[in-house]
Image 1 (cartoon, rainbow, N blue to C red):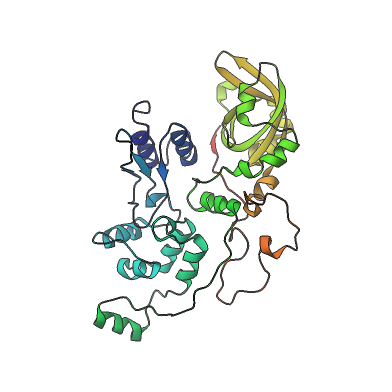
Image 2: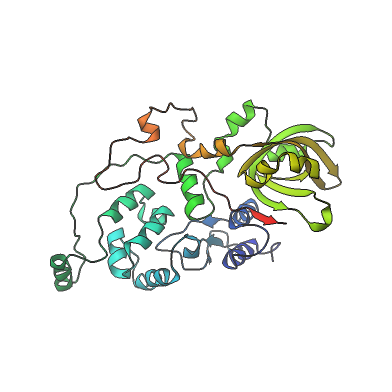
Length: 345
């Protein structure tokens, strides 16, 4: 199935979650590496499960991420949205709220997952701003007017507000926080210049290096395995924007760096390449917790990769209170990317 129908294989695995060895982010990453187009969650196109959509290539479908991918969204609310748009797609946030009858809290979950962007062209902040004007209990005067005229009557008529766009890194942080994966740039792509200056190579370069080569690589921690038959040896899989790398951590090294191995979301690994045929491992000699660097991704942008001072309000958010309670900072309320590691011990 994976060989001949990678699109179907990807959708099936995503719909069977939680299961298996790899998380949805790695399933999607592998599918895209094999030429499968993956489309984002959309309030007008997504069903509860991930589905297949036609493409220009008649032999392959695109995978549309389903509403099940939106963290915190109830199945019943998703069903109401799908049923309400059966006759015609939603035209706005207000239109969806009134026709589907779902609470504003569910719309917030959708907005934070960027589900209004594909069809309505509303960025996260714009969608959240529009939701702030909604009430779960409509005002009686406007509700009556809406019923008489059989059309949507907005409760608030406000001037258009130009919101400062999020950084590219902030978008990635939000994707991981509310969908569990991103279809944008990989988090480490924002850190690559800094890592290169520290002579940290990519995972692909590490896995292609000659046997016996000493080098340092870095990546997000995806999987930790410590089989009972391995005499205390731990196997770790890390990932960056180029590939994955497989690590071996001997018992002595594990005990020395236990806190880093078990607690870091992103690690740097200095060690020696061990190559046996097609099987390649990086045998860890020294491990470094790079979670602090990972936490900075939300403040970074592909167009402006330079670091900014703490007093730079444009990049770090203005300290002036927002009377409507709009979230502050370049990446809303998330402090860092949180990757759910698969641990087998």
